[in-house]
Length: 275
Image (cartoon, rainbow, N blue to C red; front, side, top):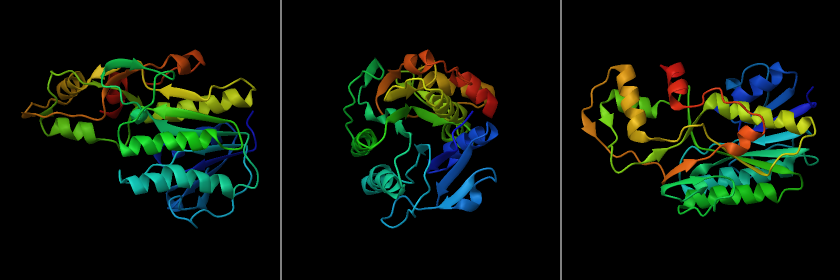
């Protein structure tokens, strides 16, 4: 069913979840990361540091390249080294272009802040240095010598990502007003969507150059934290604004029209699995 080889550059949490899915379905998966001892056995490790000039060794040819690196800090220089320069280093280290490049991006490229719905046709005019670097990474992917598809993820949650749960346990609640919409996607759906798009391309189906990947239910963050507090039996001790980007609502119609069905269609399903 699968092509011979898929290379996952930046094979961390999402990349590992994706790699395990793909190897279970018969793919050969190579994973690039600094600490290769953390990769499970089905994924073939390649030691690489995407953020430094000589950190990527010559790479074997692959059918698909999935670039899903994650910067360890929001410092603009770190962002550029990982998301822009690192992508170019990996592409340059391949002996030939892959059949398709998949780049994981972020809805952080949207600056909309008045509860608007955004999708693949909405203007991406980031108002932060990190957002502008993420958009530059997308542009570098689209300029590569192979077809490219960017998947913009909203706020990723799931195993090991417990910041919001920790705040609720500490008694922190977001205010009910002003309303601030939050958008999220579970780690398992991040991996599921990437695997789904690889399958479609391998079958010869036409992919779009961009997909927005977020669950079905943009929700005010106050509502999310109130629900979590009830589930965990936590009392509110203080009200604190919890702002991550502008208040917008992400529409996922394009990825759903491609045939993908969410594992966790809203925050209740995803957090219930965590709790």
